[in-house]
Image (tube, rainbow over all chains, first blue to last red; front, side):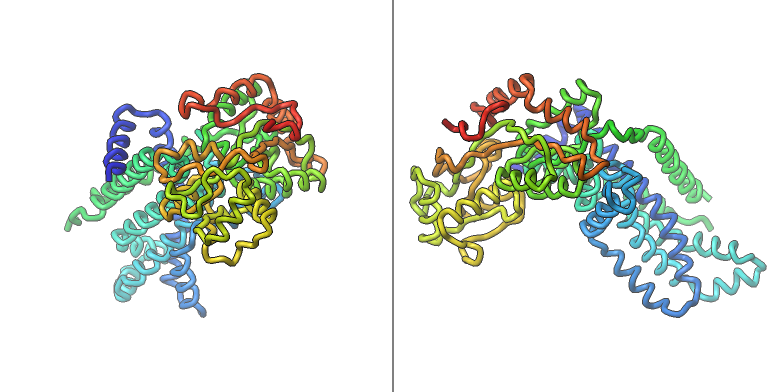
Length: 232
Length: 286
């Protein structure tokens, strides 16, 4: 118990003193996971909407695959991304293993199915009649899709939160493709693992608390946007 | 619609961050990066945090330190995915070099392994000199023993001692494998009142939180020797041979050896490693 109180104190001290290393790690975590989430939004929302609106054979299988992908284990993603990015692997010429870019790629792969799955559910739960109505009002196909996406924006914000929450808290892929290199690819989760194995439990707890607070703040902003009363 | 505006702001700020990122992302100058695959003990002890910045400042190289077990480090070298290795698994290293994967293997430093366990010492091994006898006694008493089980240098050493004791513990109930690093394995051993083999550096660094005492030490078999090996560029043309050589030279330089000699004294009261550059393995521990 003392250890946890010590950790909380430490977290406070690290933040009050603006410890440059901790601040950098925190900002870097936000940057990597932010960009990865952003990429996953592009891919996830567009393809999720397409899956939800189009009728095609095997749709149920595709949707279950996407839903399975929502639970994609980060270590599995990490392993495959590592193998693909090896110097002597298929994408070795890019030379991005153990760089932030590799971490963004891995995290985007983890977040995309999450965003896609929630998008499919969000768009599918819109009443069928709405779609007919929009078309009846003379909207083009792309206008219709855009209106539907806007209509589903509240659950889509949940997708943003779930995607971001998934990648900011993930450690398996980041440590494999990033390598936890000091001042370069070290994020809050990988630093926590390292400090734990170094026996610096107080710092590890402090980092976890910073991670939790940061995840909370990001979700708070998104929730405020989501829960805002909609103007009539 | 206010919500829309907020959303726009959000999206725009993310794009801004993205652009900023792509602008500031370091350009990958191929021959400026060195991938150093090393064991967790060199990172967990904090030694590399001291040495790497000096090396980078001196040479302009950027070192990507990947801290894994010695087994995995050598697997990376075997695939040409690392440029230089700092490892402590002599038998496997000799094989690695003999097979042509590594060149210019040089002695850097050593410390030693110790056998730690609960203060109550249920197997009664305290103070025993022969490590082989210690292992035999633990097996005879069926006392719980935690193994790393991860092909690391420490794990290889442990397996070699079991072999020398003519005991195969793999299927025994009292023999458990964590598959974790040294620090975490020590934590598990402490929680379960178990014995384990540990390198002294990691044990000293963690000692204050562990309920484990040093029960046996000082046997010649317990030497823990670190070598630096350059990955053979003839096998893998993409390897940064010049960078690897520069790093290996640096590790055996007088400057580094002097740092190693005193590293840890201020924090733990005794050094964590003993510098050995230029010595012969046979002369260590004498």
